[in-house]
Length: 113
Image (tube, rainbow, N blue to C red; front, side, top):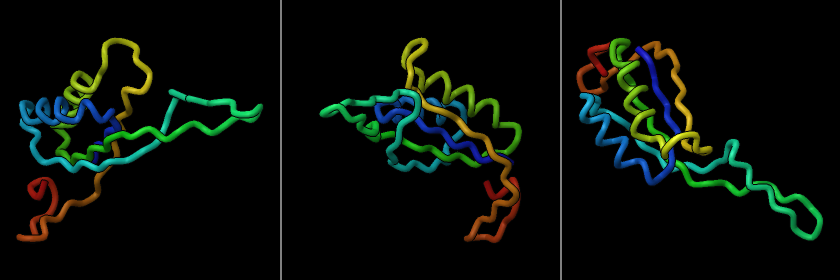
């Protein structure tokens, strides 16, 4: 089991969500976050460098069984991209998921996902 965390631009949320549903990945969590990466927007104000502004982003978290990892990653990459080579399209992180427990039934492991 893996936990896939994707940071994407806000305007791509609906596109990514629909693409994941088409790929049979229907259980996702979405959070609104803010941050910045390489798209540094350093301003100079009165001769001083001002820290870059935080940019609104979307964090998607998906717990998947191992056989869905590549499908989820490929789907997010294809649907979240703005053309070719755009800075700020986002990132995907894949972490091992030790345990998953469905609270309602007490199921554990891959069947609880």
